[in-house]
Amino acid sequence: MTKHIVLTTLNARYAHTAIGLRYLYANLQELQDQAIILEFIIKDPVAEIAERILSENPQIIGFGVYIWNALETRAVIHLIKKIAPHVQIVLGGPEVSYQPQRVTFEADYTICGEGDLAFYTLCKALLAGTAPEMRQIYAPPPDLATLALPYEYYTDHDLRQRITYVEASRGCPFTCEFCLSSLDQKVRKFETDRFIEQLESLWQRGARNFKFIDRTFNLQPQVTNRILDFFLSKPLPYFAHFEMIPDHFPEHLKDKLRQFSPTSLQLEIGIQSLNPEVSGRIKRKLKPEVVETNIRYLAEQTQAYLHLDLIVGLPGESLESFGRNLNALASWADAEIQIGILKKLSGTDLFRHDAAFGMVYSDLPPYDILQNELIPFRQMQTMKRFARFWDLTYNSGNFRRSIRLLWPDGDVFTHFGEFSDWLYAQTQATGNIALLRLAELLFTYLTQVKNVSADQLAPIMLQDLESTQGKRYPGFLKAWQSEKQPSSLVHSKALKRQVKRAL
Figure (cartoon, one colour):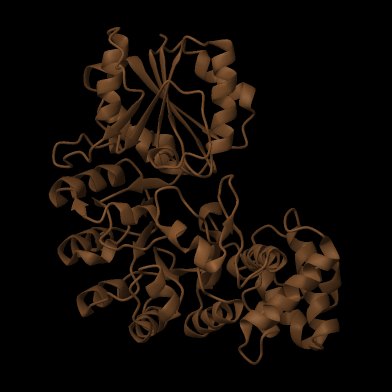
């Protein structure tokens, strides 16, 4: 049976699932039987995506457009319009909801904002032959109490093999200028009993990998406690990811977090900058002393996997200031520290700093900063490589112990920067570096440039590599290799980093 409506998007990875498509499907009412969800990834061939979509002979195709798939989505739509120009293309998602729209699409309609209900209204009109005159539709926030929830539309395969995205609330009370969430400053929550029922249903169906997309999960104590209690009442294994603000960890929350077992809980905490002047400039409230106290507490007193965020290129922040931020976080916690490059998203207020701080951005997704008055283009490129190599070595957990020998004096930024420059000089690449090749490069740098004893380093690196299941030891370490077999603690590809840091 062909479907009149195809709901589709291009996810960044196969493990991801599109909760937005499932909200649209859940709220199609009598049109639901005429609709189908088709998900792809950005690496899929454009022609194959178009072929699969058009095989349904749809009248309407709804695309979810995001910063990570805008260019690929444009290519798919262009091909579809060449083959089937009569098909109505409807766009929605953050990348088309705000001005300026820097990527143009051959679309018939665009829904700006939360399209949960607006998409149904539009489809009903189009199928009835009463196409609206307005091609750009502005959707007001829906009443969450009456919104049909999407969770039953995760397939059993999704729940077993992919990430289950859920949300207990929408909106954010803060005004951080780099973030689209700041545009919806009122936090609206789903009715808690109803949401818990949905969590229970997902659990009973086999879901064990939950990612909450709430922007400030720890701001509503009653909701936070109930959801954490839900997971604490369940048997292991499971994995729950929450995004929390860094300066709000009251005692009741700390008590709950202490009860979670290793690899069951991940906390994503957006720091961005520890420089009060920079944070104030972008309207991000910051209490450095409170942040430090909370991060140290979480690192020392809980077993949560911590994911901390820093940004390079914020207006008025020098590399020296960024370096102090990185050094501080690395000294506070054994945590994943995500180094992001500033992006100017449409709809945000970052543009107001452009002239004063010489901010220059790419006009193509992901709209990275190219340079500013404090960080010229070449240095910004250097920091992009720094961030990539940091992710490959430090954040990956593959070299959890040996990488720390780079900075015996605690100056992470300086020493890792020197290693990053050396590594790029050796490889002329920031990707497609095999793990064992990376291990050999790190071993060479530490022993030949940093003068670390090979006898001291080799056992440490062997211990690191034991946490990478199924990997052979490299030849340069054979002289130090024992008969001990590599550990097989890593069961899930999706949780490799979390497990390694727990060892």
